[in-house]
Each structure stands twice: as C-alpha cells, then as structure tokens.
Image (cartoon, rainbow, N blue to C red; front, side, top):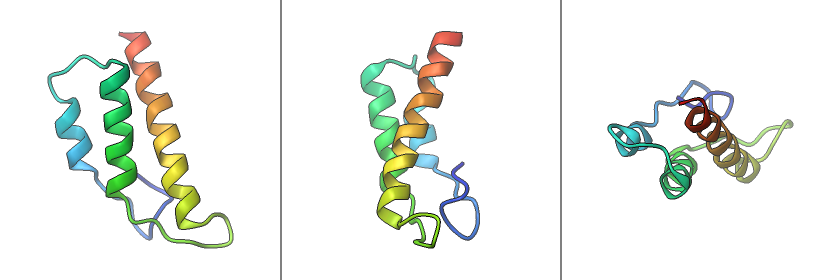
Length: 72
C-alpha cells in the first residue's frame, strides 16, 4: 500500500506477488522496491514532484523491507 503519493492510497499487488512465499534478500528487495516505484502514479504538488515521489517510494520501500528481513 502506498500513501501520500496520490489522491488515494494505492495498492501495489505486483510487489506483493513478488514477495509472497520468498525470503527477503538483497536482489528481491531491490526488485520489489522498483516494482513499487514503477506501479505508482504520483501527483506533483508543493510538497514534492512526481519524480521525487517515485524516487522516495523506492527508498522507503527498500528500507522497510530491509528492517523486516533483519527482524525475521
């Protein structure tokens, strides 16, 4: 689920399908983070451009999955 990038939260099923049943590793984390960035259609506004939001969703998705992989 990606929020704060569009008018409504966006469910990113492609990324979910990639992760299902797999252990999070470096390559898989990168692939899923890229899938998030590719799937969203962010809006530009005063707080950030669409380009910036695509970049930051990739970074934040990667960080979240890295934290999950360490926790497990």
